[in-house]
Image (tube, rainbow, N blue to C red; front, side, top):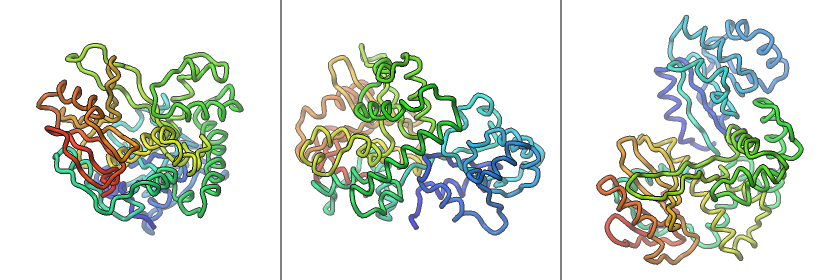
Length: 406
């Protein structure tokens, strides 16, 4: 069993908060974690059981009245339970009363978005980080903001790096022996998410067209979003295309990355980027095999950017630093793939390069970002396919990609 980076935060929250909700993709390991953290005094119920689900939907208040110190799995299937939980918690505010999981972000639903404000802590849990797979305690984010990154003699590079990016982080996919079997799992998973999980949270007019829509999104992972183009692929409007992307975000298939901008730089792109949250699923949707990824570095580069983005999000879950991710691009096409802004305004930048060679002009976006931020700029790195750290000026360096989980 993997040690999960979210476990410490969940334990801390249960000690002082009445309701703790773990949200993330289906099959990411949420149930395994809550069953591990639960003890004999906690009742476990899952809303994937149709009998239990019908009882919860028929009488939410009565269902919750009979529970205390409970684990409720897949809460998005009966979101009205959150209103009943609010009433129960208002009457008895003891910490740790309810531990919930959700495979969709129920807090975006209007009828429940404010129901547990101040009573519940929400913790996101994504598929396995590389650090979790290797049993390491990652320190990358602390080292990045501290400017004390280092090389990695045991760096994963070349073909092994390609394999890791294609693997993704879903435990069941990782356990399969071949790339073909992992892709079979990924396609089955996507079918389940698109036909089942989305129905739990919304009415979809063109449900049968969603696989085509997802394939188009996969081709544009790591690029600026174009909702009109996305919608046109299945003959729906810009607004409907935007809604569908939002719904796929709610079930943690994709994530949009907002632009970072400042008044000190004119003409900054203010369009978000879109990434798949698991590089293994992305590779499956794109039909990207090891041989294709190895032969075409451009194809691998777009996959690698989404892989790194997801890894950074996973590290943020465990970090004591409060960070918000963005991307940066100006009208001269100088860009930074990931901009991390700390709650005190300090900035760090990450550029991703699927190459073993880094040149000075690869730092153009980071230099622009550093100049705009001044003293607020902590450090900027180009992550690349090597084990050596190479300084490229003040607060800039080329850094091994495997530093992410070192």
